[in-house]
Length: 190
Ligand SMILES: [Zn+2]
Image 1 (spheres, rainbow, N blue to C red):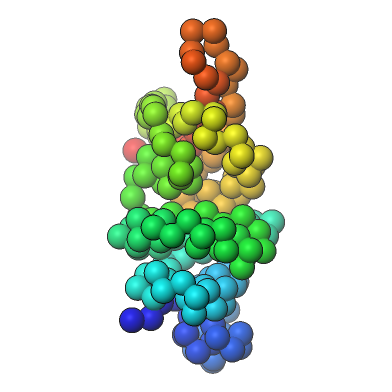
Image 2: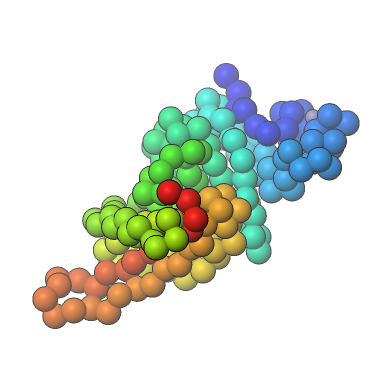
């Protein structure tokens, strides 16, 4: 078994694209982010055997940070090794989020927040027929990621075609702990 990538494994190893992959890049079928992610992952696969049964579908980049879309069945498998996630950030030279391809907004947000557990999900239908999905996670678990969420905005636009905003909510006296909120809105869809 070997990792499946948007470009040829050989290209990923050597860092040089063959004519076929080069034309895919030119036509926009694949992106520069796909190439960068493929190169990093193929080298990681030598040390992390977990990677040798997964499929990278698409990659999105903004400001040197990445969202990597794998087959949904691959996601729990990738999470089975926490060291893999640490190394992924190093290998990508930025922050990298692993998400399942396709799936609902809720699933997408759950993947983004992982390992924090989503405690509340709200879906609000907007007057224009679109909707906004908001998830809430305990701040205790999400604190260290809060600075990172700003980096997501652009990539969520690319990956989901929707706007993304997050905010920490103020600690209320009736709640045992402060909560952080992230919301993802889809406008004009339903
Ligand atoms: Zn190729």
